[in-house]
Amino acid sequence: GTAIDYVSIFNWEDGKCIAQIKPDSLGKWEYSYTGNLGDVGITYVADGCKPITYGAYNIASDDPYFANVDLLLIADTEQNSYKDWSLNARNVTKQYQVSIQQLEGKPAFKFAGADIFANNRINGRIITSIAPLGTIDYTLEFWGAQTAATQGGARFFEIGTADSNRTMFLARWEEFNGAVYINNNDIGGVITLEPRDSILRHYAIIRKSGVTGFYINGVLQFSSSATFNINQTNLTLGTAWPFNGALQGYIQQFRVTKLARYDINNFVPDTVFFK
Image (tube, rainbow, N blue to C red; front, side, top):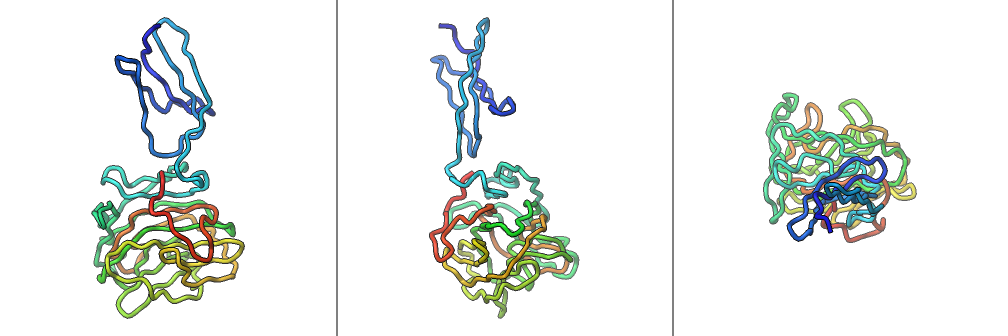
């Protein structure tokens, strides 16, 4: 038969081209993609012949909840890390002292800085956004670590702005324990199991059926049945807004999912956040 000139992969819903691949001399071809393509079509094109299209094929992520992921950040190379891997493809901005460093044999976002009272002009942070979580079930989770140099008021993350109803996870520092605030309200627990030893741990805030819990490595630390309406959209990793201390630590991957992924008692967390 006639040799194939190229193969076109396209989005089945809107027809947008995803990739064009030229087969080898034997007519073989392949296309590698990390993520969830959804429904796609495949068209074979040969000069002088009518194109032949097959589909739709659903190309799904290894994450069964990928369609519910609102934000997904994963450290990779310096050129391939500052992006949102969810279907929303939100803008992600790196500022000041953030770099990709190896921790436990894995790439991680390394946050540094030492400026507390100068409007955070040098402290590392990553700025992006999420959709308002409102009062729905959700899972907000990340693999992170901190060092003994973390300063007072440092956040692993913060949702909101300086004068709004902020949701945040304050890292532990010196003699002070960490804390979780939702809409500026401490949800009632003391975080004592948050060592500053540069070891990656899984941290999660999960809301399910009206109960919000905070977990370390899948173990419930404390919970609250108070009603929280998270309507802010700005999200900052590392040092947040003016007059917060610098986070001296790491975040390896960070994910927000608009449902409760895990059992709200205790669970085994995902070690890989699939793209």
